[in-house]
Length: 376
Image (tube, rainbow, N blue to C red; front, side, top):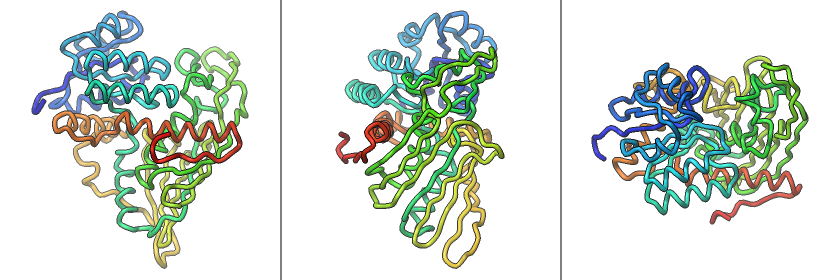
């Protein structure tokens, strides 16, 4: 595959509002020497055609099955709601296609493991959209920690907001966001923003060894803004996690539903023997928002801005969402051409799902749950 352009079919494009339209298509267009968007598949041919016409995409497929079967599609991008991920990803892998699937990979740990195992067996590349892991600020943060800015990490504390549609008591519209209210759909405050953050946190600070947790649904209803209807909610709007990292450092996380009142929706502090670093952002969706780093060490008695070197941003889209997705696609292309594994993989996704599963079990049982090193 050296030198060729990879041809992509995207499942789930709604102009002006969907993640694929906002992030994937702009990202791929900045990488036009590497990728070509072949077509779109939505829930109907009419929906796909409307999206293709508005966005200037060459083809609208009549169905997802038609797109997966198309010989000119090398990669299937799955950017739809979580429940159909398993069915679409399995079909794409069975057809020999490489897959970029948005996070969460599956509705629970078992589905994620099934997809990862199938991709490995079929010899195709499965990449998961945990874009925060390669955001410039997170990449630089990882280097600061490795270089000893804080010394030995003693503990980390994270408090964040999940946004209006995740536990905030309202949703913009029922058709698009109503499924987030039902915990059974696998798209919650825990699995989406906290999951993205866990992916980045594990890269920076290492594996989670043990967790205790409390989860609660303190807002049992939510109003749909488009209809005024009050809808039942079973998804948690409060998630508290405490635990121990494999390094021995302590970890404390509190994610709560709704938007920040003052635009400060993320506070993540890493405390060490020699210094401290804080990561800030407008929400707990760290894969989607501009982040900033401040820190202090030694005798410094205040936090100072830690500027990201220009080399971390040069050549990438300035928009945060498209920029992070573009970085991930670039790594995927590198892996396909060189046989490397630099992009977040399905196996990596299983690791995050394992931590989420442990958090859920800890919350349900009231006991600490240990994560074994061999993936149990």
